[in-house]
Amino acid sequence: MITIVNYGLGNLGSIYSMLRRISVKSVISSDVEQIKDAEKLILPGVGHFDKGMTELQESGLKEILNNKVLNEKVPVLGICLGMQLMTLSSEEGTKPGLGWIDAVTKKFRFENNVYKIPHMGWNTVSVSNKNILTEGSSDEQRFYFVHSYYVEASNPGNSILKTRYGIEFDSGIMKDNIYGIQFHPEKSHKFGMNLLKKFSEI
Image (cartoon, one colour):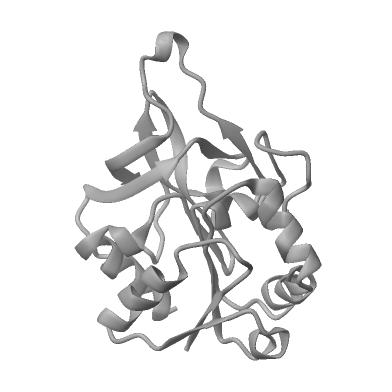
């Protein structure tokens, strides 16, 4: 059973539907007691970094998530903003992130508007470090992106996926039981289904 954390931001229904489509049981919850019993967690997110951190703090979910992830070592998958919240900080706001992975979130900046912001649509990813999320998949995988900020891991060993959009950025990060992806697997058809299935099998 995967618990999709509801802190007020994110494509909760779409993720739930995709998991149901691949026969993976899940529940959407903001209940602290229910999250305390979670076997696996998905931290989704669409929106502003500071808003996300504020919601996690004020809902009481930040403390319980820290315990589940850092102490109990429960597998967690951050999606889009959820991945960015796992970093130390973001140029989108002033609040510190969860700091689960030594990484920072930066804003895309392109001279002369060569590339549109946000980065929106399908793009390919390449494997930078072997990982369970893409194990056994084809070398070139395509996922759906919508974001104006990107993650840069301090330690190359924490990068598992790379994507190029003007610059090369970390579209997937990992540390121990902690996984983050910038793209939306729930909108990425067979590649997204495969990735979510792999996460469910951890």
